[in-house]
Image (cartoon, rainbow, N blue to C red; front, top):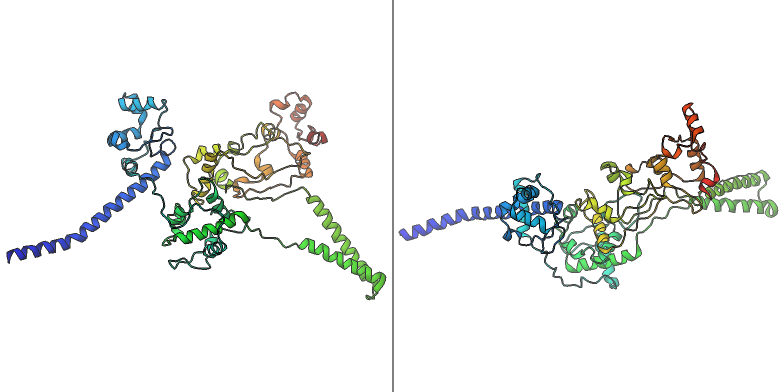
Length: 482
């Protein structure tokens, strides 16, 4: 009896403590997972520029099994301030410093003790991503069957549900139609190109485990099968070839021109041969109005020839001047560094972009997708092919050095308030009249070495006269056409 009572007591105790043990185990696993996520975030923000989590050396040594070679307390102290330890004569710190070409590791004194613990935990527990096991050919990027493409289009457009019963319209985020506003989500064409590039986006991995916060939120509860991802890939292979769909504007001016031409022809025919309309004044009014409208349209369209005001092409990377020049206050000449001494302002190289984006790996609205294009350009050695927006005819000479370097003209005077534009467009019409008017009204800053020998000009300026570019030959034909 005593033994049975004892067993019952143990069973009751086990039943009472089992849920507690499970809760504590879940709490500990959750804490470890949170520590790993936080550690990963710290590593990617501060360490990934110089270190890899393998044995391969980058700027600094590879960190595989570093916690087996170094004491964790020593590691925390070294990460916090490596140069302090080198100056204090710590043998290990001095050895590491010398082995790495005496390149000082930046101090991380802003990291708390808890941050350092999480960082070291992430380094210690890091495991490379396992290869994806799928039942379809994930290497295939072309030559899909028509049925696969059609099914992929229907899944992508939300026409049919996924196997798990969820219907998701991918087009609502990943556009297939070109627009004149900046959609920070990658278009379907962007997705297709990124997937088809060498070492590009792994669609099977991304669609199984979303890499961005926004995508994880939208795809919450969505589990795609291998075949569904395969079909979506098939559709994207077609989209990548066809490109974006462009909405055609209604040709109202052309139709008006043709309609009035037809009306004038009928008026002349009736006036000469048919004589159906009794009053000739009607024929005359139709012809006069038609000729007036035709003449106006011809003049207006003739003036527009070669001018591309409001031209706003889609760039290969969704670069927002509003974010960079506006919110972050990056000076125009940091990226367009040739403007003060060259004919052209120049395009920034991907290497210049990496000065910031080695640290800034994700945009607040665009996530990692657009920034990854810069990384792929760097790895491939192929430059980003930016599309030029402002271009003068070949017979016109224009020098940024003369305007920016000498005359100190602000970028906004010609290009508009670029710092307020997500997508940059051609602000001015860049016509000859626009340039001449600017030269006639803009005062020249003559207090620089370029104008130091212009004695008469300086005398006029001292007398209070406004000196414009016109006064210095700024509207002479040979200044721009020679």
